[in-house]
Image 1 (tube, one colour):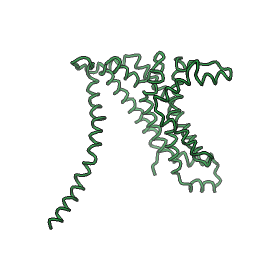
Image 2: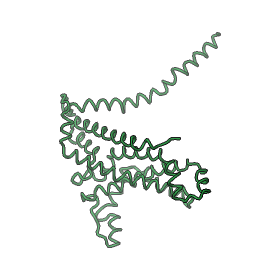
Image 3: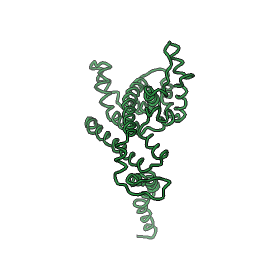
Image 4: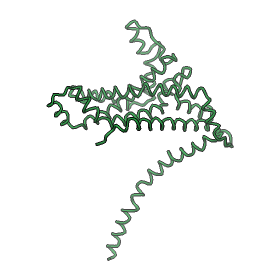
Length: 301
C-alpha cells in the first residue's frame, strides 16, 4: 500500500469511527448538563434538609417525602392538577381534531384559518396570559361586557375560587389548540385518498368514512397527542403563574406552582425536590397506564 493510499485509508477510518462521536459530543454534553446531572442532583437533594442559606445540608432520609404526604396544600395542588388535566386534555384534543377535519376539506380561506388557529401557539404565554387577564377583568373586561349586553351579570372570573380553574382551563385550551390541530392535520393529509374512494364506491356514508377509515388510521397520532398533552398538563406552570399566581385561596395552585413556591419562596429545596420526584412518579404511572390500555390497539403499519 502506497503512502497516499495509506493516508486515504486513515482518513476513511477516522470518518467512520471517530468523527461520528465528535458530532454527537456537544449534544451529549448539553443533555448531560441540563437533564441527567440535574436529575440525579435533585434526587440526592430530596433526601436532605436542603436550605440555600444554610452551609450544611443534613441527610434526613424519607422525612421530606413523609412531610409532603401529610401536607394538605400538596393534596389540594394535586387535586387541582388532576382537574386541570381532565378539563384541558379531552377538550383540547376534541376541538383540535374537529378543526383539523374542517381545515382538511376544500373551504375558502383555508390558509387564513390555519394561521388564525395556530397564532396562539407562537404567542408568548406570558403575553397571552396578560391579555386574558384583561378579557377576564371584572369591571372593564371584554367577556363581562359581552355578557352584560345579553343581560347576564358579570363575573369575577379569576377572583372567584369557583370560576378561577374554569377560566384557566379555557385559556389553556385556546393556547394549545393550534399545535394539536397541526399534528392532526398532518396525519389526516397522510391518509391515502384511495381508501376513501374505494369506500365511497361501496356506498359508505361520511360518518362511516370517519369511523372506519379516519379514526383507525389516526390512532398513532391520537396516542402521541394524548400522552404529550397529559404530560404537559401535569407540568403546567407559566400560564397559572401569570394568570392567577395559584390563587384565589389555592383554587388554581397546581403541583409545579407549589414546587416553585416551596423552592424559591420558602427556600426548602429538599422538599421541592422530593415533590418533583413524586410528580415524576405520577406522570410515569399515568403514561404507563395509557400505553398499556390504549397503546395495544395502536397499529403503525
